[in-house]
Image 1 (tube, rainbow, N blue to C red):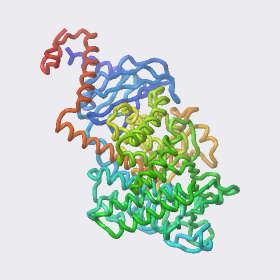
Image 2 (tube, rainbow, N blue to C red):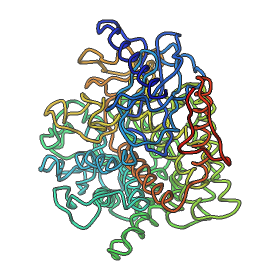
Image 3 (tube, rainbow, N blue to C red):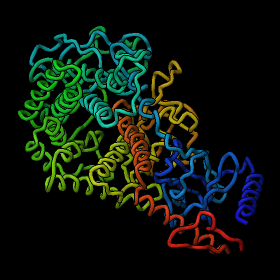
Length: 639
């Protein structure tokens, strides 16, 4: 009878598909994580519509057999969100069989997606492709060199225009500026990804990024590229440089090896010293108050690199440790924020906090007392739960120091740090649980970077506590990045290969040469009010997501939109850590299942099974129950 019921439902499904005219506009959609879902993980899709007519049920259908395999749980309606009049969460966590599936609810049918333990396998390594493509100096993607004449100094303890060698590092985004802040944060996340999840990374590239294994994980090769540049930006004790190039770079798009300099110094670019005082910002000055925000990032990345190289290159490790300590001392001498400089436009990285950077540096240097003092200065990252912030105001968007320090402690101080994380997550959750996407990340510039940072904070909280309270919120934010969002698109170029992902990003590589920029995380949606206020922004083509734009936020897969569709190096590096963590989770879960059943998963299984049985009872089925266990051969009997 159950088989006949499935056949009947499929007939209805096919009839509905035939009746749906191609020229009739859709009114409802189902958003999913296009990468897919792990068998034992949380699995939720979002039904969204421009009508108030709610689906009565949602079903999970095997894409190869077209058989209904699961009746999905529908939550209470969440109401309007963005362009939609009505939204509902579709929970199919209770289904765990590997395969490829789609969901149907009402007239809406989702794209096909996998359920598989390997959905995150190789994703972190895939995103490393974009990091290699962002290399300055020798660029392995282009197999050519660029920016080999950098640079001439400004604001330093030596005469302006003095030449120093700062070749190397990564271009920040689709422009070719380079910043210590973003580069140090990127290097730290790559190093931490290798430290925490070495098993997920491969070795297919040489240190210069060209093909060929070299006995070193590719992620560590990439981190070393960043560290070597940071060492050039810190050539002497107390000499810290913050920025290479400025927004005069933005006069035109070009491939980096063809770069024509706009600074009036041939092919040299300016390198800005961390003076601790305000520096040029067009008609204005930036709001620099010190150097600790930059010094702390230097120190933490050097200290972590020192730990990782201690066993393979002792001399290099000792040099890095020395550099880390001196950078930390410089930050102590000049507390405050070090903002970037801009000449032509008002847009800068307006960093507004610095104690989090010094906390992480102290934690990385095993200076527990100092780290705890800095931790009390900013217990909760200020943007969490807020509706807006300045561009990069609370960078790097997550307090990494809390996690690193908590791992070193026991007792009250550890619990305080963990509770700081919880308070921040709770601020977001109080707003997120009012909409079906569980979305409460402000739609400011680089909202995807904030999303990665917040998801990572949820992950670190879970690692420190084994508390699964926020697991669904964590997963919802990751799902958002890969298509469970109003636009139904992944925010990572080329990931997954079969999905809807950016095709026309704000990038010279794609726009001028049609080069793939695999793995690049784009900025992400912004408030519509921000989009309308930006200088020189426009769309080159018809907006394929026009149906899903709203007064709340916009996202455009269009070269002309530099606010939502420009990939960033630091966001991608942070995503590499998160994807490595997710892949590691599946490996860990395999080991746990081999060793014995996780009791929490057992409870969830039986809860979901009971829900299914209650539904089938309403349909007229009867059941046997024996000794509090369900009989594998006798769960269902005929009507």
